[in-house]
Length: 201
Image (cartoon, rainbow, N blue to C red; front, side, top):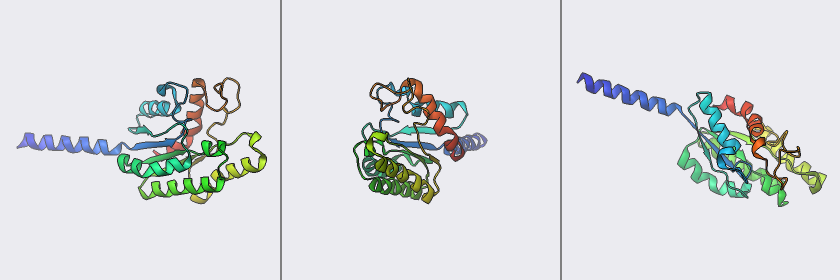
């Protein structure tokens, strides 16, 4: 009987320890999918390594797809929330909306819907912003940036205004397509995200 009780206590302890560990779900595009690189070189993989080194028992699920838009992410999100039950959802979408000249108003609406859906599922949301190159015109680039800025303000979200800060347009930090960061830039991307993400864990 005593041995049975000991086993029961051990099972409960293991269950409790496992329950503490949460899932960080990254819903993004090629920037988070490590386009042009090995998966283990990307900033999302480096995030898992950082969590492990900090003894934070969280699992990172990278649900990023190259070429995805905010509309694509919105359509995929319900199934991802059901499957992974994340503690934190990181939204890294919008770059492809911008490169295709899609409406910043629609971008904001899609990200807002994803935010509300994630919060209703019990997750905290971290918004990673993007900026468009000036050749798309000042009017569009301003409206695009404002879509992220205003959503973060209205929803009071933890927010990184420009994920590629210190990377975009910097010599040696971008691949030859001038869109995707190099392997050497991935640590800087993580450094941009970490100070805002850490308090959520």
